[in-house]
Structures are given as C-alpha cells and as structure tokens.
Length: 322
Image (cartoon, rainbow, N blue to C red; front, side, top):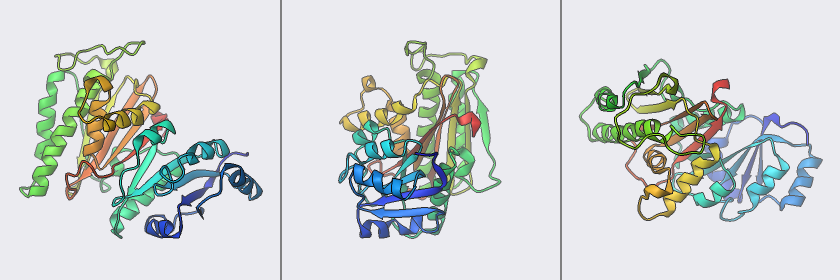
C-alpha cells in the first residue's frame, strides 16, 4: 500500500450501540471513517484496497478488541503497517486485559469520559489529533495555557525530600480533594524520582548501576529533571532522565506483569512504573532510545482514588524531534 493518509482516521466498533457510546468523543474529528463489526482480515484488506484507504490512525473500541476480536490488531498491523493504533475504552467499562495489549504492542490507551463533560471531551479529542500528527504528550498539554512550569534539576539523590515538599506546597487548599491530591502527588513524585535515580541507570547488559536508596551524586550527563505544573484543577508531573534505557515494548509488558500478580513483586520489574500508572489519570512515556526517557502524566483534583478503574497511557519514541 501507499504511504498512510495523514488526514484519514479509521474507527472500528463492535456494533451501532458501541459507536453511539463513543460518538461524543469522536464527533467532529476530521477525516473520520467509522465501520461496525469489521469483516475478517482477508475480506477487510480487500475492501480497504478497493476503496484506496490507508489511514494514519486506527481507533478501536475496547468492546470490539480484545475480547470479541483478539486477532484484530495483528491483522490491522499487517494491512496498515504505517498506522498508529489507539484503543479507546469508556470510563464505566472494565479495563481491557493488558496481557493481550502487551502481546500486540498496543502503545496508546485512552479512557473516554462516561458523560458529556465538555472539557474532558475536548481535551481528549485534542489528544487524538496530536496522535494523528505524531506529536507526543508533554506536560504543558494537561494544564491551562500560561500555567507556570516548575523545574528541578537533580544533582544529589538527597534532593528528593525538598522537591516533594515544594510540590506539596504548590497544591494549596484545605479541602479533602486537595489533601488527597497532595498525598497522591507526593507518592508519585517519590516513585518517579526513584525510577530516574535507580531504575534508569543501566550498563550495556541491562544491569542496574546503583542500589535502590543509596546516596549518590547525579552525573551531569544523566540530566535528571523533575517538572510539574498545577492550574488549580489539574496537576501535571514529568521526569526526564538522560539514559533512555526504557524500551517502548517494555512499558505495557511491565504493566501487564504487575497487574497479574496478587502482590507487588520486585522481581517482576517495573513496579514503580505500574504504581505511577495506577495513580495517574493518564500516563505518557516518550523515549529516545539510548539518550532520554520522559515519563509523566496528570491527575485531577476531582479524581477519586480508584486504583481499579481504567487508566490511559501513551508511549512514543523520538521525543526530541517533536
């Protein structure tokens, strides 16, 4: 097939009711073609070829994949090798099984609001358009324009406590929502910094260079930066390391393997990443292999502490080019 059409989005649903449930999110997207209950791979490929369709982005409903059609993504990747694939699930639906997503290397999961909340729908629609043009998520995408971004370069591991204290101080207010937000923010900042300090530094064979918790000086080449922004409603957080040892295919593998265990197991790997994902409203990971990893996301003050609810993620590469 020819190069993917940057102006075409293909959305696949299980049935008409499924399409209607996601209509508020997808309504108004440019170049959107919707298909319910798509045919099997060979017939589907013939249909797309006859119509000369080669989308840049394929949106899948979680009510179609992976439960009903577990083979679907493998077929789509064969038909549209240049397309990004976005799995969308409703906030009221159960989280899709991550084991299948990991096997199919799904890099993008979006949790659509179950109601018609305009602000949430608009921001998520913008996220879809960013994915269409291959623009990775960044910290400033989560907060209102003009919101101040705080940046902390790390030189010593002992700076972590002061960093967390500064973060908590910026979350003003005595309401139960703000207190819960401060607690979640402190937990997440701790895990994010620990990952950058002790998880990311690895030798060529993948062995960690530092033991968790040891005092250390951060070499200038590591370039560890913690950033956050809070606009009064949404807190965005992001950590950058100069190692780039996390590979895109590892991320969902770590999430799936930790989700399967009944208890957190350090030997499984990716425990910190899993905790960050479960406490964030949305997680983004932008990787430049061997050079840089940017890990971040956002959480809203009105969010409930439901660690079993579905959470989204977006994993991209070549961050420096965005």
